[in-house]
Amino acid sequence: MRDDDDPNPKDPEAKPDVSGVSRRDFLKISGLSITLPLVGEPKMAMAAGQQVVVHGPGKVPMEFSINGRRLKADLEPRVTLLDALRDQFELTGAKRVCDRGECGTCTVLLDNKPVYSCSVLAIEAQRKAITTVESLMQDGKLHPVQQAFVDNDASQCGFCTPGFIVACKAFLDRHPHPTPEDIRHGLSGNLCRCGTYNGIRKAIAQVAQKGA
Amino acid sequence: MRPFEYVSPSSRAQAVSLLGTAWGNTEILAGGTDLLALMKDDVVAPKRLINIKEIKDLRGVSLSAQGLRVGALTTLGDLADDANVKKNYPVLAEALIEAASPQIRNLATLGGNLCQRPRCWYFRNGLGLLPKDETGRELVAAGENRYHAILGNDGPAKFVSPSTVVPVLIAYGAMVRIEGPKGKRELPLEKFFVIPRTDSEREHDLRPNEVITEVLVPPATGVKAAHYEIRQREAFDWPLALAAVALKMSGSKVQTARVVLGYVAPVPWPSPEAEQTLQGQPVNEESAQKAAEAALQHATPLSSNGYKVQLARVALKRAILKAAHRGAA
Ligand SMILES: Cc1cc2nc3c(=O)[nH]c(=O)nc-3n(C[C@H](O)[C@H](O)[C@H](O)COP(=O)(O)OP(=O)(O)OC[C@H]3O[C@@H](n4cnc5c(N)ncnc54)[C@H](O)[C@@H]3O)c2cc1C
Ligand code: FES
Image (cartoon, chains in turn red, cyan):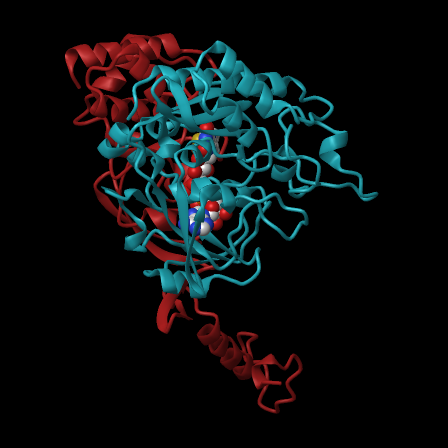
């Protein structure tokens, strides 16, 4: 048995010091931090003759580009992008409803494409441009899609609205002059339980006419 | 979700060597749209995720005289938008844009689509792929089986194969390429899917340390294809039955037909019976109806899914008529 594994070390030097940690314990703790690295000291694994980094299961330093800003956080690999946005960066526009890709309230843009942030790990979203609903309003002025939602009464309880707005913006960027069929199909990834779909369709028509 | 380690290999060889030799400890992470949901529900609990998205040569779509090559990491959205796919394999493009939702199609990869796990609610609730109670009684046969299999269900597997894209690929004659510790292998896509007999097996022929690298689709010049899905809801949902058909015509008669049903069996379900019925016949209401009846003649519905037999017949009949009425690619 290796010395650090011994649960009852009979070491004459193992006297508690004032902090309650013996010199021996201290050495053991610092020894442990070499075998089980804390944040910033990734483990390596051999793969086909090369070393690859193993992240986690503990916290990993991560860096994101969110709404044009560089933001950092130490997160476990299991944290989803949605939870990172909401819990670390106070960006609570994207909402957590189903947490499994079946409602659309968590929609954000990843490299300009709409995705469900509940279905992406934060660690995978590094080095990608993340855009959330918070960035749409510029200089105190609502984005045309946001303004069109207001003008057309396109929300009721409002919970699905941020996800819908991001999805509508992405949709209109791709289909500036959509047909009703395009709208039905292109916005099929968001649900509204209040049933504001009619208002949302009108909002899209307004933006399509005026241009975003 | 339980804690796990996360590794991003940069080559196929690295990925293969990082994968375990038994299912369970490691899982490949592609788009994550299925895997992460299963992990949140603790249906699978890998200790290590092998993120394959940094492997550059698993990407890309290209067309040559041999047909279409689709890298396993191609997203359903990119594949649906590909000009060559739209022009040469229009039914594949249609099936892709009917799958899931725009946000999922922007993440979901074709390799992941092939390997997505069944939607069976017993499986998704952690009761296993072949769920039984302590007395060995099969839960699906005795329980809620309205969305389960009506064909190929004589063994313990009663779930239905979940991809709506795969039946179309099989109808077009697609092959799948796989890489593992022993090198590369290639097999017809329909052979990739297997009906598991024991809990240690999966729904496909993949070994735990193999990676799907690409899907190859032969040229479809002169092929008249179609698919028909019957869904309760158009988005966010899975069909009740679907059919994919590819016809090669000789004048007004069918020279050869490829018929694949979906959502009826634990595997995508090719129907040689329907194919033979169509061969040498003109396509009309009557021949389409006969083929549909032949395809379902051996159906063995469970206690609450008899309705699916008729839905599958209708889907197939409509797919055959639709294929005949559209121009060849
Ligand atoms: C609301 C909703 C609706 C949906 N509707 C449809 C639909 O209509 N039609 C349809 O076909 N699908 C549908 N899906 C399923 C969706 O298409 C799949 O989740 C997706 O294709 C999986 O791909 P992925 O890249 O996200 O895979 P992941 O979630 O990353 O992986 C899925 C599985 O495949 C394995 N895997 C991934 N890539 C490889 C590879 N290259 N080699 C070996 N193994 C691999 C993983 O280990 C995992 O077991 C729907 C999903 C949702 C959430
Ligand atoms: S919370 Fe992500 S789709 Fe519902």
